[in-house]
Image (cartoon, rainbow, N blue to C red; front, side, top):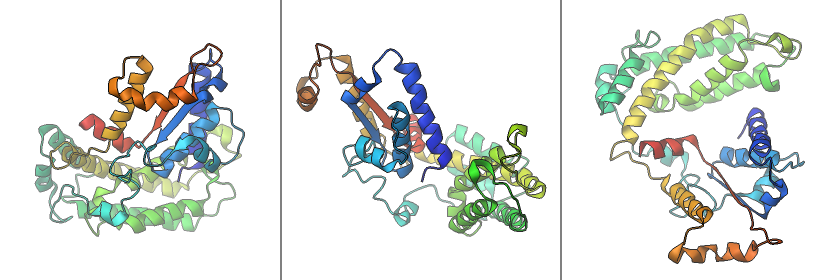
Length: 329
């Protein structure tokens, strides 16, 4: 689910888009032919809905009604459509875990042996830089580093458990909710137990970087409204953030090498390219040839209004991983 901060940021982007891009337009006219396409991932749909709320000055407090009204998320509306439109949402966690990926024998495999999986020279260089970094250099294999990360985070959670604070953290989060975030992620990753904990280390890094940015310290102007993490917890973060970041850099180097290989090529972004191509062709006004039949419904519903052609607007929201796959391809 999208966080409150994510909703606010997406809505602010919609407001900025209206003010900067649509300054000389009647924003209401955008509704004449506006379609919003989203990945089937809930966070992408919620981001799209919040953006629309800012763009159209919508007063509704809840996102679901906006999603239902504006954001297409069926097999034709999702950007990852194809194969029944179920490429993303229809895959269970178990199926996702069993998807082909780079493999190494165990978490005790030395970094130098895993490096061979990186394939191309650029990926090997990035991988070597990660496991040679000061944070990761003391550990000769992934398991030792992952177990150290787990132990440090558990120590931080013990400190938070004994801490009492009257004021909330950033975005009104309590210490208890913060602890639950980490406990849930530790339970999911099972750091050091299987290679999955290395493949998905980015999930833990997301939490650590968020709290390092927003909860380590409080700006003087906000000191009366929210609290920071305890000093001792902050000291632990000084160690775990660079360690987790180095592990994530190593994992990303292998992942990029895999996805750029023939076996790891992911074509989920192809439907998005087809959709983008179609909308650009229509916007350019060129002869669509046999494809002009697809525009018949649009012409019927959105004919010229008062002598002025309809303004055609399209928004696309998809997951960062899909865009990375397109760039790699």
